[in-house]
View 1 (cartoon, protein in one colour):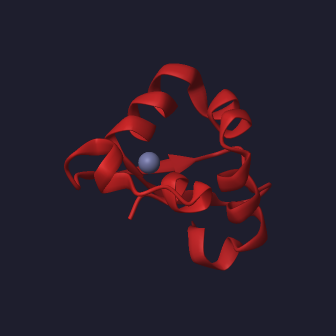
View 2 (tube, rainbow, N blue to C red):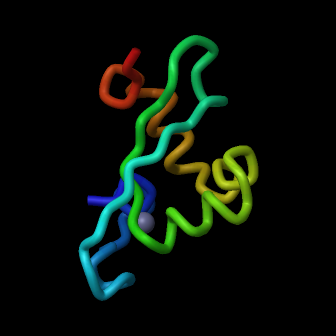
Length: 76
Ligand SMILES: [Zn+2]
């Protein structure tokens, strides 16, 4: 399940027509450590095109989800 779609309550398979998922790392969410997220194709492209900061601005639900549950996302 795409973390950004889940945060928004969207059905990512319906949006994407396939269930391919891409692992990404976010470097600006935590002061220390890296947040690991899994994104669908649409959100993966959005992150690539807009950059991490603007991607999180557009996906505030995801940003707050990551910020409030760092145990799930953070590693290293
Ligand atoms: Zn998604």
